[in-house]
Length: 366
Image (cartoon, rainbow, N blue to C red; front, top):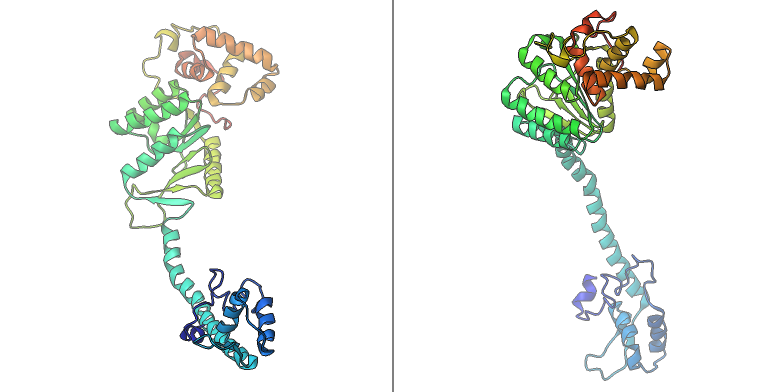
């Protein structure tokens, strides 16, 4: 305490913790040790103070319960404990008033700083980040796609028309396909008339990607593994048109994925431009040729539409083993190793036009 410090003893802190030697009880201990109490009683009786009593004597001195002879010639003199207690209580009350004043400032300070924090959350936060520059948007999407493990859901009202964008997008999505990631891309119906988009879809379908188009409006987004998503900026009306948000909130990402899935179910399958496939090798009648059974046509249509094999088998009244054998024959017929490649070849085949169903029809989501 301040009064004790002015007496020049300087021994109030006996164990290195602030306030404990001068009677503080923050740690739950007694305000005065048992040894100091016992020594005070001895001092009042005029008994000798031993060297072993040094710590206890220091306590009594700090509490001003005893007075010492500066020359050390006389024994300590006991002082009034009631007066010492009043001084101690005054000291504690002053310290408590200082603490109370500091505590009273905390709510106002929190409110003042909270304004800045809320503004920061509106613009960016732990679960979302604002991306203002196109290079930053492309880099973040590329990084996320390169780490994708299971699924990419891509809703693009417009296709990648510039050569640079086509090259970078194809490289990263082809890399994802090579790792076994499913890539589903949704375009607007108007993209079917764009040569660049048709070429892009044709090339990526051959690599195993799946595409559909929808005439109705849909939300532009990229959803990666249903863990994070990229969406256009709808917060600030004055931000540039290429600005985007990287979102990690689980609820919002799930909402975006569900919206994509609903649009995908209503969309039409698209395999790109079949340009020049008529009669040219395995892509036309000159390759796989005719002779497909009606059941094989149905299987090919369902495979191209991404319909689950169990649904196809149940609809056709056959077992899964029979369906697998049929698919094996069809892969051998076109000389392709995967179902994705088989669907691609079937999409380019002139014989597809002879089916009873429109390949462009709606199919169930994978």
